[in-house]
Length: 466
Ligand SMILES: Cc1ncc(COP(=O)(O)O)c(C=O)c1O
Image (cartoon, rainbow, N blue to C red):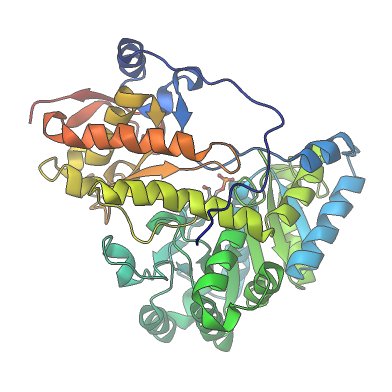
């Protein structure tokens, strides 16, 4: 008989969370301008806004935190972290940064400047899907970010194991037509923007080899590297018998550089990495930018204790029991919603359940933000906070001022690592099922205040009649 396996940890410390009344939540949401980002965290019962920096650290991480070396230069914790990076990824050169976007802000301008020095006039980066901060830093540095997204990821209800894959035909076409302008390809694992979906080893290899054959750099955006490795182990025959550390090494053997938000699989509350396999020149050029932007090259915006915690977190991320229980929890929530007939991105990805708001609220137009309407309704119903991944995040075309069409209208329920139990997930599912039953009563939204950029974070809204 199948025996269900519990989490591979027990709880040593608890943090109380506060249930509020519906009236209190209504008041809090109005104060927040109907934008969940503007809610006070203490008014949230279960916070699924993000899995970034919101997980629980282990006793070993807390213990090593106390051993952190706070020296300004040459910290022992930096050398410990670099050694862990060498062991896990086989990358020689490590720059710590305050978080993932710290790596993006020091690396991309260097690559673009060097490309321009070599005569590139219209620099472009290609990705299975750029994460939004990667795209922002590429564009801020004067280059273009183009996605070669696989078509399966657009069909939310069709189960496909590898919705995070590159469309290799598209990639080949771009390389053939525009080789001289391509600065790098960025392989985002797992691919957050299409639902935390994995890329297969076959696809990673093929994309990387296509790039390398044309002399193009390969970068991995590695925020959820171990979740991707777990999916490879369970879905790709060649890897059924390999360990997670072996698969991680194999994935990274295809890359020249990786950037990482360590707030995800690195299991720290703050931190990131920018690492180079063996290109000492690029490493040194990027270090030069690190100093004014992030801090001296052996701390990069982090306290010594943060690097110490990251060194342990990266190793714990490889633990297969941890990965199994984490991904099983995402599946648990996804299954409950699917059983109630709620449309989600299938199969569920590694860190979140993406609910298809377009299907639930078909008559609310994109410019009235159906996924945000759903997020607010879920908060009102159960005090659960989630986030819109759709037209609001997409923004307006800078030239025409028109709302950009969004491929998806998702409500994302991101699950922090080692933080909530399956009981919490059952409660989230029950709350959402209740919301969906009365979906026809939900009202569209329009802006009360719309900032020019990054609208998701500070916009304010009002309800309008259908
Ligand atoms: C794939 C990916 N890359 C980069 C980042 C940016 O990292 P950070 O939030 O640590 O700056 C994120 C954050 O969510 C991400 O998911």
